[in-house]
Amino acid sequence: MTYDLLRTLRLTTVFGNPGSTEQPFLQDFPEDFTYVLALQEASVIAMADTFAQVTGRPALVNVHSSAGLGNAVGNLVAAYHGNTPLIVTSGQQHRDLLIGEPYLGNREAITLPKPWVKWSYEPARAEDVPEAFMRAYAEAL
Image: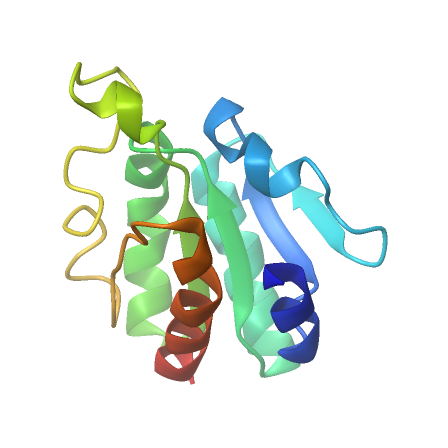
């Protein structure tokens, strides 16, 4: 369902630097999508920023949880000031593990990217993801 929505929104190019927390998103990655891999999250944001500015459409970014999003923030600041329409997703540890504060758990998932995003949200359920993408897309525009 989420991939169908992303197709409808023409968000079939994903820029990312995945880790283990992003595997559910990539497990059944569609053949008609393109995943542009970078070795560090700052580069991911820079590539997506350029793509969005050249195409005039929002770009979809997928970075690793907490530390990865932290690595991305510097270029996220530049994209914010450039009014670049980005949709940035970040992995999160499985909810059952969060109580133990795992190293890559994002303790403040909604707060970490602020104030360099227009909207920040952490879906509580898998079925909330499509609506979150719609909202993020609308905010990016």
